[in-house]
Length: 198
Image (tube, rainbow, N blue to C red; front, side):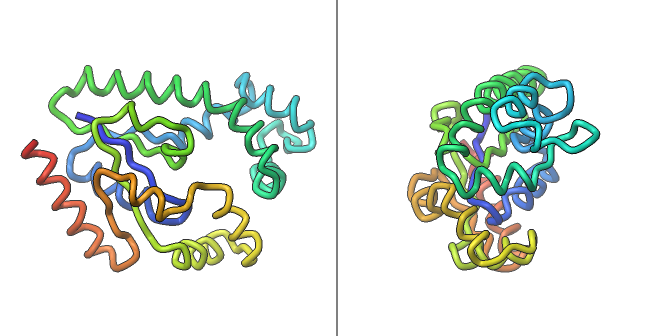
């Protein structure tokens, strides 16, 4: 059995995925895969540097994430170009890891944590989609605090993703992560028990 776990920026997907892993789920982390394809020597990073210019690389050849982020979060066309370059390779690796885990651990729940699941149209890959939810004002507040962003920068990042309310309404299950960790954990436990009964 597999689920796609998604949400919005700063809603707390990693909190929920770590709670599921503690319960015995196997995790495929799309963010980790996205970081891997941006490592020096990977063809995706080479293609991104060719498109956006060598200025997005640091002296040691690694990606300057902040510099690239500043370019793409303020420019929808630039973000689309980045996604067009990186997403096919990321999707291929997600599918590969997911199939490997489902084959090796058929009795375990496989959780695939994908921030842009709906934006990428990947719903059909999963038996269920769970959305980790926090209202937009909570997202903005967390984002500003976590990444030391201005209101404008936080807004630009939120604008680059599908609205969290839209994701919430499309979900098979919703974990509301706008309260305490205990409340989130209780919801995860309830969803887990329901999944085991299916």
